[in-house]
Structure formats: structure tokens, C-alpha cells
Length: 277
Image 1: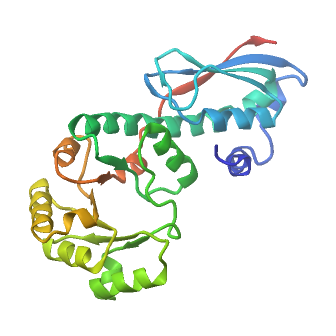
Image 2: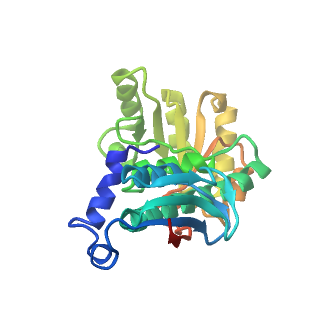
């Protein structure tokens, strides 16, 4: 679960001086019963985070659907009992967290299922194209995907802007010398650079913005040189839900998509007060 202190920051931003509407309209001391329901079908996520927020404000929570479970439209995810003002204070923050995380988890699960049906060994990964990394990375995991790097500190990914300053082979040598514990990945756009990266000792070679035909040609070249089994092959750039199966059919290991987080469609969840407790 994401840390409570991280989640509370969202709520403090939403109500820096309290919920003035509820404080003005709802008498103090009223207890209420409420439910959070799914308004569409998909994979639910953010349940533990919503539960922690409500419980922090003294609301009793019963979980009816757990993170990673599939839900149908109209199904109850959480049942809430407690101070009405507290429920209304947390409502939007909890729904925003669940909506975003469930949207990511639902799309990840959909793409993972499609990719696995074509090539069971290929993994679907996210990227760092997000500002809400704790939520988004956890949502990717709940959906069955790989989160990729969480931060710049986790692994080494040598990109084009690094290679504009340092030659490819030297960059890999420097990375390898820097730490024996960090995975070294190199982003390349040509067959020639893919071969150089593999020969220089890269752990992962990312084939960036290549067509399926270009990737197939690159893999064939790696096999001819006896290099294919020495590296993981990641493909990225230009991959969409519409063409992902074309890439999955290739002899690759990972498909990474920034789309999973930078173009997420919110999952529709709603909180309904069903009466006084």
C-alpha cells in the first residue's frame, strides 16, 4: 500500500481549510452509511489506499472487492460507516485515487492478456512518464504489468542524450564500472548500435521507435553474432493498443508503453450516502 502520509497530502490540497460545505450544511455528530460502487466493468485498484484514508478519519470500512479483482458495473467495492462529515471530506480524494489506479490497472490487464495470448514470455511494462509514480507504479503491478524503473536511482538507462555526450561503448563501460548491482540498459535506434550495445555488455537493449520489421531484422543480426541470449530485448516507442500484438509476436522480452500512465482513462467509481447510521 502507498504510505498514508503521501495520500494525506492529496486530501490536504483538496481541503486546506476544511470542507466548508459539509461543515455548513451537515450538523455535527451525524453518522452515515455509504458505499463506493463501480460504474463500469474493469480491474479495481486503490482499495487499500481509500480504506487507509477513511480509517484515518475514524470511518469504519468493509472491503467487498480487493485490489486486482475484476468488478462489474454496479458492484459494491467498499461499505463505509461513520461520521458523515468525515466521509464527505475524504470522498473525492479517495475516488480520485481509486479512479486513476483502476484505470491504469484495467488497461494494463487488458494489454497483458492480449500479449500473453500471442507470446506468453513477453512482459508489459510502464515507464517513468508520470508525476504520480507511487500510485501509478502500484496500479501497474496490480494490473499484472512490470513497473519499470521507479526512479533514476533504480537502474541505469543510457539514452540518446547521454550518447550525445559519451560514445556508446564508453558509456556502457562507465556504467558497468560504476556498480555491479545496477542493471545497465541502453536505448538504441539502429541495428549497428544494438550490436555494439550487446557486445559491450549491456544487460538490456531497448529498441526504440523501430517498426516490427526493423526489430525482427535486429534480432536476426543479434542471433547471427551469438548475442541474442546475452541480453534482454525491450521494445518501446510507437506501440499502441492497436498494434501491440504485432510486437508481441517477435522474439522479444519486454514491451514498454508510456501510454499506460500518460494517457490513462479514469475508471468511473462513485460514493453514495445510503442513509444515517
